[in-house]
Image (cartoon, rainbow, N blue to C red):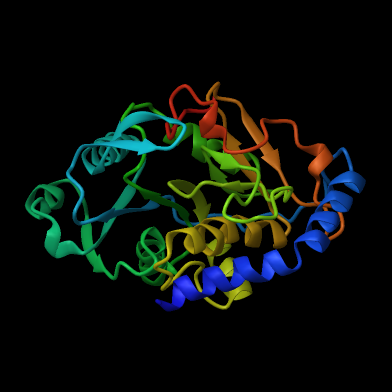
Length: 299
């Protein structure tokens, strides 16, 4: 059994052993949580470089266009071609650096096509999947002046919107936001402790800054999710942990909803998980989305 698989099943076994205690703790924390988010939030450092650094991660075996199928979520078109179209359109108005990371790059027949529409291509290991690409890109930019960073993969809905300017403006106006995304889930699904409240941004599109990523890496002792090749563990230790770390740093998270409105959320304290302050749908929002994984502009 691979190390990541062993880690995941060991974690699940430990949770099963303490399931009654964990369930009661979550019930208690959810019950006593406050109905309002704390206004005392950390503020991000100013951005000094107006260039937006973008990393799109891809697996070499995917075609440029594909259909994404996830259980209980409507199918949608996606793929690297749509991502390149999206960001090359945005760079007409905003200076961008578009970097592509590809795992199992030898499986891709499209390298020449990709080169035409991007600034750089990096081959990365498939251990860590998307987070292998994200961490590799972070290593390239971590010593640059503070700037906005987008971490994304190719499972983004093909629908094209003029979104980036509104996302950047929102971040400029709201320095209390450490990360902005376009989709969320309120719980860890990969667990038997079903009453957990763990709101997090889904990592197919994340807007943050170099400085916030530096803080995350310092707090975590490394980039989240690196080297994990078990998908369920990667969701917990990569995607969910990334949001959790930003909340621990006392920033808020923000999600752009389908209607273009933004919802901010945070964590008040270790003993106040803000369960009663939550105002949106509980669970994976894609279950009720008309166009899941779509990047919507802010109205």
